[in-house]
Image (cartoon, rainbow, N blue to C red; front, side, top):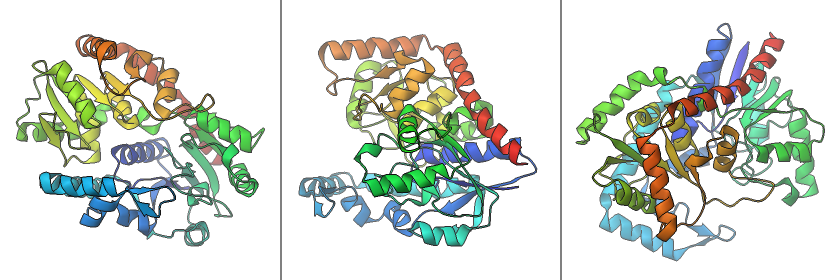
Length: 406
């Protein structure tokens, strides 16, 4: 059986690469006679947008409204950052190079696909796989990749279609036109197995395709064995030492903006070394820009606590059986919670989740400090392990489906 995985593996995003690696490895382990590979698909314009050019550094993400007007304030702030901190640009280049090295850990297809539209992609891929698994993460978010999106596999691909832990984020089908809803309905209805990661996506599948069977799936990183990361943990340890961090002394990992770094400094100054990952943070003792994806995943196993605003920063801390305090400010509705909110409710680890003000002041700060220090001093390792073990069982429905195809 030829199994192709379609996901965001070329994003400059640690979680995207790690979840792709984990799903591919797990499927290959469970189906040793199958040929499992990651379909090396990403439109050329998206690949170009990730490149660490000065143009991208200054102008990427600075549009407003309909995307045709630039936000002059943000452009000026980026120019000021480039002048005041030229090292930040060098760090971005180092991070990009590390991600390119990370791709070597993925079983990529020999052929690369760079088409922007579904029809061209379908023509190039059709008949090359017996099963295409779409997922995971927000591959079905149509705000990120507008409909009709290749990640919905519309039309005849000459393969059985399945999704695993696919997510729409908080996109709401009620805001789509009737034509768009029909396109979505036809696409999802053509999947033989529909697995989604969160209740927000369940809401969309139920609303668009009433009666269509679907399954809850864990994020693939849930399936990652911490022992498998040991070689990369040694490499992460060496990088810490190279940056004058003692891995044998307490470390707090910070994956978020400078407000979060400032908070970490206020709580843990004198208690722990602060290590920043993914984005530079002047409140941390060091920033590691050159971590490959699996080194990043393993790094959390060397930390006593993580403070983060990122979903996969949360997940990989938990996978390493380490406590994490996650800060969530993304908008949500009564019907559709954010992915962090959904995750903590499902795992029953709400004491590690913080949703509230951004200023970290007064009683708010006292509550955060108490929660952070409690996790730092009394890590609930067994509770984390039990929650992940239970959540990992949601992979079994995909495994059973694939076996039914053999």
